[in-house]
Structure formats: structure tokens, C-alpha cells
Length: 474
Image (spheres, rainbow, N blue to C red):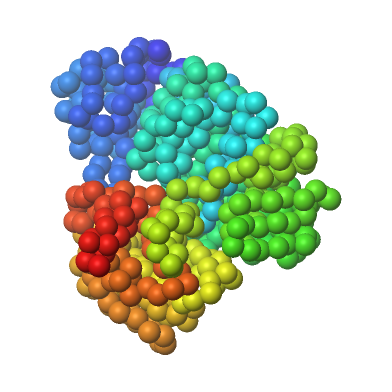
């Protein structure tokens, strides 16, 4: 394929008639005849590997900084964006071959995407899914390495989905993916916004920048679905270039939940005169259901059909997931790892708990440190007892992360147990009848990141292991 066709719509300097047989941004994967794209990353700069790519047979190098190598060089202002455009063109723009729905926001993305998928499947559609938990083509599961894949990987996955004749793809779209142009060139039919709360300020620095990154989606999609109750809604409506439909509970919206009922079994509400029942507890489940059903309405589905689909919806692994250990207290796993996420899961559990609410949590290393004392304050105020532990410390000292959390702990009973497995064991040994134990932070993850290594750490497995150890002790 000629470089000029790959970079259609992207200004560049150089010989566009050069033929290339693939696109690559990792010098280790370069093969003869490919176009090597020099991308500036946060750990390394692809320009440093340009000569290596040339020596391995790259037909041309695409760069944004001046380089001297032994093969033709094409120059463009933004190689990251050019890589996304070239990747989409190389795979013949696969996202134009199905309905593409992108879901962005701090919390609720994963559950919302699963709910949309289930609604569309109930209508007989074959649906692809891309997200934090996993990627799926219909019922076939493909492991996910990050919330939104790199642009070339993403377009390759889209092409596979198009080849397998999916009718629609619903995907989580992270703020990183939007800001770093990973989804540039994607043809979004619908963009969905769930909420905006503090997270990723290690990357975006300010909440304003974080919101601006999320807002990019609403310049890329044809139709927008936005949470009217979130303060960020006004900014999105004022700056977005798509047609918007709003949903909410507490403020006027195009689709509004009324007569909301929350209980241990799930939620029930009425919208547009139709009753919706979803077997996932918590007020946040009402918002997730609203975002999903509003998306379906925008796509033309009837309320009664959407209601029927949502009534059969299943929860998502690691999201308010109850683990039945056979004890007289309840244990659940939740992915809550932000201040808002912690507050939501605590509100949900306190709404039905007959005994104490015991929260086990930590904060990830190499991530926004500003949220640590905030999470500590919320936990100490809302939980009856907290167990502060480690959660993917990465290259940081876990003891220092815990010290940051403790700066916000002003009240309430708590204990610090740095080793997460020991902390889980402590929680089970000290829980009493009717208590609810929440393991927050890791959710669906089956690993612990310590240093730069991933170690197997599946909390569901660990819970059963500790349960069996406890039974042997009796």
C-alpha cells in the first residue's frame, strides 16, 4: 500500500509513492517492507530506534523530528496521530463496517459496556466488546492488556471483528486513549459519558485537562449520550459537536429515572413510563442502566425491549461481586479505586448491611497520589472498620503509599496490614455475623504488580483458599 494512501488526510513531507506492506511502531517487530513510525513515549522515543528499523529492512521511516537513517524518511507533525490514521487506512477503516459505541468516564464504563452489549444481543445482534475486563467477539473472549489498545492493535481487532460480521462494537474509551490519539480515525456512531471524578491526575495534572481529554470523544461521534447529573455535562454540551441526548435522576434530562427503589437484590425505576429492574445493587447501577438504555434508545430500540433485556442482565466480574463462602457474613469484590468509587460502593453496602461494613483497600503506586488521603478520609468516615493494605504498588514503596492514605484518616477504627493476602485473611477472621466485607481496588484483576513484575493474585481464589484454611483450623 502506498504511504500516500495510508496518510490520507495527514499532512506529510516526503515520497508518498513508497509501497509498504505493514505499519509498525515497535522496532523489535519490524520486518522487511514495513513503515516504521517513530512515536515519542513517556519511557522511550521511537526516533532512537529508527536506524535499527532501517537495518531490519523498513521500507520507510515516519518521523516528526529530523533523523538521519539509511532508508527514506517521511516527516509529519504528529506521528502518534499519523500512526492511528495509517493503522485505520491499512485495515480499510473497519470501524465504518459496524455500529461503533464508545463509553468514557471515570467510573461505570465496564458495566455500561456490558449492559449495552446485552441489550443489543437480546435484539439478535452480534456484538464485539473492548474493555478493561476483556475483549469479546460475540461470546469469544480475547484477553485485554489495557482499557483501550494502541491504535494499530485496535484497528487489527476491529478488522477481526468486521471479518467475523459483528453488527456493533461497544468499547471503553479511556482519557489516555483520547489524549494520545489511540482512537483517532475511529468512526464512532455514539459516544457515552458516565461521570467525571478524580483520577489519573498523575497524567492529566488538573481536572480541567482530564475533562478536556474526555470531551474529545464528543468531537468524534455522531450522537452523544451524557449524564445530566454530572457537573461536567454542561461543558460537554457546550463544546461537543454531536447531537446530544441526556439522562439523569436528580436534574431535568431527556430520559430521567423516577420512582427509584434500591435494595439488596438490585434496583428498580421508571423511565419514559416503562419500569426497569436490574439485579445489580446501588444507585450507581441506576446510572449505568440509564446510560445503557439511553444509548439503546438513541440507536432506535423500543423501551419495552430494552427493559426486558436489562431485567436479565448479569453483574460484571469484580463489580460489587458477591463471593459465597458459606459464612454468616457477606464478602464482595469491587474494582473501586477512586474516591468516588469508594464512596459509591460504601453507600451501596450501607444501604443493605445489617452488621458492620468492613472495607479493605489500598492505592496503586505510580498513579495519582492526590487521591490517596481523599480515599482515606472517605473510608474512615463511612466504613465501620477499615483495613488499609497494598494495591499494585508498582515501583513505589507500599509503606509510603499507605502513609499518604493515612494523612486523610481522621476518624474511625482501622488497622494497617501491608501484605494484601494477610489483610484479606485478617478480614475473614474478624468478620462477624451479618457483617459485609468489601475487598476494594482490584476487582477483576488476577495479578499484583510489585516493582515492574506481575504476580498471580486472584482475590476470588484467595478467598476460597483462606476459607478452606479457616475450616481446617476449626
